Image 1 (cartoon, rainbow, N blue to C red):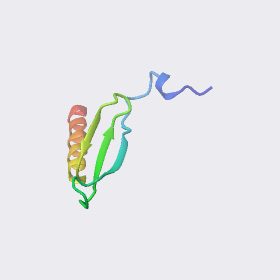
Image 2 (image 1 turned 90 degrees about the horizontal axis):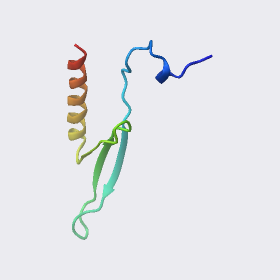
Image 3 (image 1 turned 120 degrees about the vertical axis):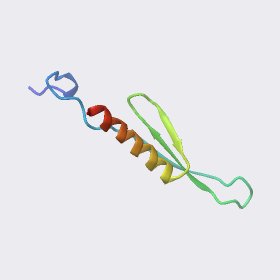
Length: 74
């Protein structure tokens, strides 16, 4: 019989994280204005959501998030 991973107390802590990535286009502020992409990232475990206006912001957030977890493992 297989035991679901969440019920097996002998398994090490999970070393993966799922995020829900949302991309949506926001219309320009003025008539004829350029639309802009917006990015949202949600942690389905906590429902915490973060918003970003550029890929650089998303990259910085994920880099800091991963670094924080690496530091807590040591």
